[in-house]
Amino acid sequence: MRLYLVQQGQKVVQHINTDFAEASTVTRSGSCSLTSKGDTRRLTQEWFYRTLTNGEKVLRTWMAYSPSKASLFCFCCRLFENVNTPNGSKFFSSDGFNTWWKLNPKVRSHEISAIHHQNYCKWKELESRLQKGQTIDKKEQNLVVKETKKWQEILVRMFDIIKFLAKQNLALRGHTENDTSINRGFFLELVHLIAKYDPVLREHLVRSKICGKISITYMSPEIQNEFIAILGNKVRQHIIGQIKKAKYYSIIFDSTPDISHKDQTSQDKTAEGISKMILSKFEADGLDISNCRGEAYDNAAVMAGRHSGVQQRIKEINPKVERYEILLKSFIKPGHTMECKGRCRKNDMASLQRHSRYFRKTDRDRQEEQEVCDAIDIDSAIKDFALKKSRRVKF
Ligand SMILES: [Zn+2]
Image (cartoon, rainbow, N blue to C red; front, side, top):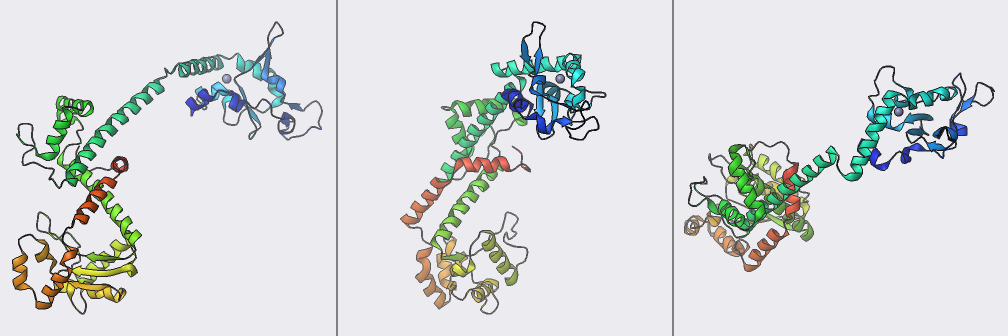
């Protein structure tokens, strides 16, 4: 604020051309009035000029009038003096000076006071530094801008590398990722390859090596996962946008266990619990269940149960939803097609054959995948990354 005001100059707050007659006529008793002659004093434009001994008039640049408070302030003392200074002049108090019958000698005494002189010098020094672009704040500001730009450039490269690997269906991680490893996986190897030709990444890698563990590298497995999650969310948003545009949609639902063989879908494994979870996801994504036209699950009773399974519950909410009876798990897992054949009921196999085309990747699917990848806005992904203040992962 101080920098802004000094940059703008006192002119913006001086209000020298105000009509002081109405707002600034005050009697000794404090009420606004023009009647009690002798006791009434008012501020005039004349007070904004100091008359030198040679008769020359000089503008009192420090003097600022506030129309809303109908008071006078000292521009430099307000900016540079602690308002709580004991016995401080009214000119830098928050209420300002408005006892107009004391204009003489208060204006002059403030003007020649040591404290005013100090603040005036501080003001002029800052003003001159600002004009030359040499303030500490300015220098700091430039450093911050430079530092921000550097990290943005590094992040753009990291996100782009991950986007490239995702587009090519390549795994990011290597079996061993330390410096002695001969193959650190696609992500790290690509970072090092690009660094050979790109000064930004090269400098980043050199700095990371020198600073060791304390430096931010944006290359740890945890950060890679965070990048993937952010990009995944962007893909998700893009797909949801496409669904909304198309209006009608179908759902396929299946779950997967994590590394500790714990199912990742929901705490509540009942049909009611899973139905609620699916519906709340729809709501969170802004998808209208009444536009859903198809559903497909595995054949577990909780999902496919004819009377109270998830698919029945969804159908009760929206009768237009058509059921696809498909053994998803068996079908999706590569190499399990034969096993599926042996275990499928007759109508399941017929259904599977009928609908399998939905699950085969066509050239059009691949093209759509590429388009989704290309549609990801890296700048907006970086913004999302920067907004995540409470990180649990290490850099
Ligand atoms: Zn002052």
